[in-house]
Amino acid sequence: MVLAKYDLHCHTTVSDGVLSPCELVARAAQQDVEVLAITDHDSIGALAPATVAAKAVGMRLLPGVELTASWGSRVVHLVGLGFDPAADSLTRYLENLTALRLDRAQRIAGKLMARKLPDLLPAVLELAGDGQVGRPHFAMALVAAGVCESEQQAFKNYLGMGKVGDVQMAWPAMSVALGLLHDIGGVGILAHPTKYRLTFTRLRSLLTEFKAAGGDGIEVSYSGIKPDHQRELQKIARKMDLMVSAGSDFHQPGKPWVELGRFMPVESDCRHVLSSLL
Ligand code: AMP
Ligand code: ZN
Ligand code: FE
Ligand code: FE
Image (cartoon, rainbow, N blue to C red; front, side):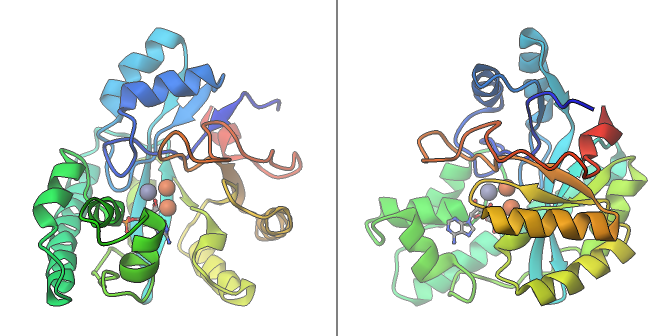
């Protein structure tokens, strides 16, 4: 199967991306992307407006989402693709995640205030607008307030793993998220497996549980992945009979090396998730 130019992982203003759904589709079209899945964090709010925009430019749009889930005490991201976006169970599931994100934002703001920082919650909610609120909004607010010089520094000092803003939440378990995606006719893909700061040994344990819970595939190509890691993930995917997926994880224009539709090609002897979706 010859694959069209595609991107199965990207974000809009509906979560922590900078482009609106329509702007994102327009940019993807400029990059000659023919098949697109918008995967906002815990929301499918981009799907309706993007569907109109995609139709106008003849682009194939697949329902997508990036679900926040827990694996033990860790947080993992699951890219859901090809599900029924109108399913009631999905609406309820995402409403719960919206509430958890709001609760988390309040807690993060409180923790930062306990560190003698100003109350960032109003600015953060303003930045998030109608979309899902996330840590990147805190990073922007920390820069705007002059507390940090860059968003990267905000993650390094306040928001990243183990820092004060890394608040533990009762995210749905990975197995629950996979169950939901299957119930509504979709597939569940483990997003960016090398971004969880796990050793490959721990990553294999994660993938074993993921597979046992019905996980369908893993991302093997995305912005920032090292070529030897991509090869290793493809090897694991073949061995575990998992499908492979890929996407840019684009959030905003102007980041060097991150562009819609841009990532290393996937090995052709892997089972590509697009073959099961198109
Ligand atoms: P959240 O889902 O609200 O916890 O935010 C997760 C998002 O924060 C990711 O999708 C990235 O866009 C961003 N992010 C996470 N860790 C970092 C980091 N260390 N540096 C920059 N951005 C990060
Ligand atoms: Zn993000
Ligand atoms: Fe992610
Ligand atoms: Fe993402």
